[in-house]
Image (cartoon, rainbow, N blue to C red; front, side, top):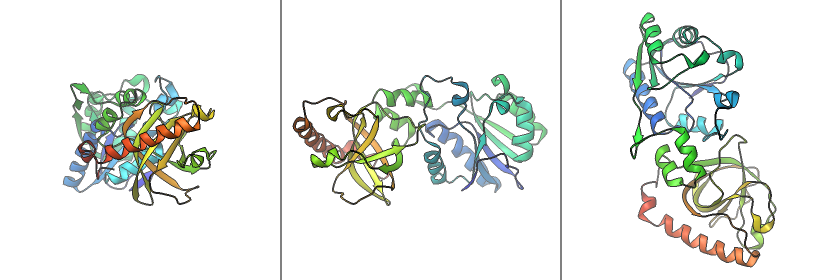
Length: 316
């Protein structure tokens, strides 16, 4: 997959583009991407996801939780896995945000990108004052002989799938709903750094993962997870929080990987979240915490042997 992160986007051949922010790459986003790929294949042209960096919410501050479901690196990994030919992260600045919508559509999408098929969500808005929409894109597209397709909302359990809904589910520990909305398990990708090694004293050594600073983490607590190291998946359980029993103060992601003892400091690993086990709690001491961790481990093993996990097996 080709990846452009600047304004040098001019294409030499026609493209099929889907336009948006794509945080999470959830069921709705995948519908847009799927239609784009279908048209690209039919016309034998390049499939493109055209997005923006940083996410506009960081410029406008119009979200209660200023965090990304997918870090930039995670987002790139998923789009490559989905088979997109070109991923554009167009620089999003205050100056660019004030661009006239028609100018953006004409000069960037239809002229520089040579777009012949444009796919957008039913409620997509863009440009100065968010005045650009499907109708404007359709009008401009006609001048360039391009087809503009509006895709209706995707719903799950009677409600629209959205990045906001996923953020809410993650904050409320509803990892099951978040995963269904995403269509694949939520994950954290990051560098393993050295921690305080307290877990080793309890025979529960952990990999302390440092995610992207903009990454949204699920609500504090313990989760049944699978951790991928060098393309091999291991059952694990992961604590998100500050470890109050041992007087922690920094919010961390710490993963106990079952049956794994290699030194992985300085490696990038990926941890997938499947089941919320319990909230974070301050125990009376190390002994009580150790007993609870043994119970958590048993519950985690049971989950990964259950029918509930089977629907996710192989989808991560």
